[in-house]
Image: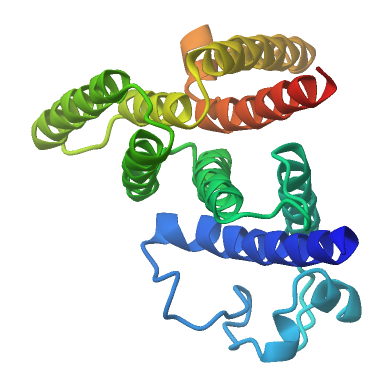
Length: 270
């Protein structure tokens, strides 16, 4: 029965993966992600039901659009598989089993899915556009407030701890609004700070601190490799110019998922 349950979870995860690719493409373009029918970005032809099955449709169509025969980027296929695998991994590590399935377990897993959606969307958009999308940040704040209320009611969590995070949200959003009015643009740093607070709410301070350290290490390696390539091409940029090209939210999101999985594995082993 557990195998059947995990198959369902994998399918659900791959459906989320399909949604992630759509949302990462549309959100920066300010396009509707719910009501507008899926279409091929090359020929703009509306996709039929047979074109929308995660993983299966890509294989059946041999990685090409049914209508214009343009190649579909492999990342769609890869993300659907990774998303399904990620959902199974988290379900297993938080103890989702058919024989021990309870309402609270389902709620916990639902919040996990919502959190993964936040992290992947923010990281994916940043990777493609080097931008922390404010609408995704607001989504993260909303689900974190819902999660805080849930923890305070069900687990009787420390309400004062979460009150601090709410105050931080308000302060950062207020400063962002002032910055937006003065300079007519959203602050990248503000988006990163909001992301970190949301990460702390859903995980904990130690995991987020470890995620930041891993992110800094990844960025240092990236800058080192970039400079080595520059030396070969004899083209030099300042550290500030290189830093502006680094998708911090992408590295932070990936690091957080890795650290959370390692922490859950450690708990399971113990």
